[in-house]
Image (tube, rainbow, N blue to C red; front, top):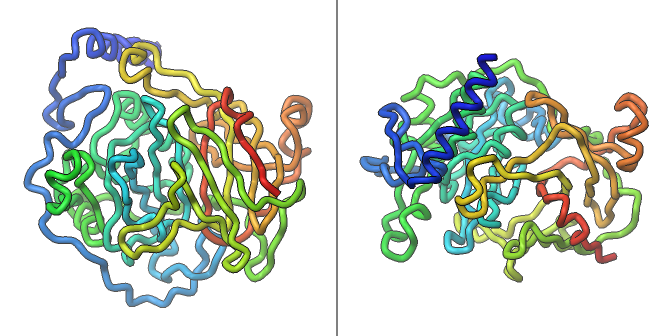
Length: 381
């Protein structure tokens, strides 16, 4: 009964906000709106930079399957950063160094990304940083991460409260964020804020955020390091799809690097920190049911609500090949997993009867695509 009551109260709040455009106040969390952004940011950190890593990098990284993680980060919580992807914010920074990059449509057909790092200490700048959405939090929550963002939606707030979860919100903890003054006047204000290795450390210290974790969930079912697998369905030199009428996904295989380079809007995506292209060993496309949260429909078409409980069709692309497969997640604390099979298999078999896909070691990209655009996925041999 208490849970039903809290949901009802939440929807009532959203309806009041949408109907009158007013903002209610919460002194501890900034202005509450459907999009709680960085309009209250002031007094942000004036310095940023990398943090020296003195430990040997010879431990297992459960997000890439490689033995290149600093030894002092073995039982450390991963860092996830909510990163802007609207065209007007480009270029982004820090994404060439993340272990996993998630991309999902938010409101108005625009996509946003979340970059997951086992260790951010070598990353000079990450961003631009934007607000947190529940569809991202639900994907990374099973890894017990520290999430860095600027503001939230009310639905992300509800998920944070329901799961008793703390995040590093720069709307509250300003020492975790830095404004790029060179962007001011050339970019909208919300595209000028970044975090970094040292700023994240500052934020963790200021919040006394828990850093140790006994969570050992692996991102994928990795092959043995030094070996490679090729997906079963056929060759793939390129995979494309639509997130929305205005945002596309596009990955092209480079035989020399044996990686897939990311493109969007006919432009190759790169990291402004180091001018490196965004490339990944693994590309996953997840076809999922998407609705909108009741009461948010008038806000840029509504805030998307993704259903991760039923599983569905997916694509795994790696090593010049692809496989049409299925994905499963389940409840909020369960990891996203991929299996050989079809949607019909999900309906007639138990998970124990399905074989989990083996995934190549290295960096991975995960794109979540709404069901009605699943047929836009195109494989070029």
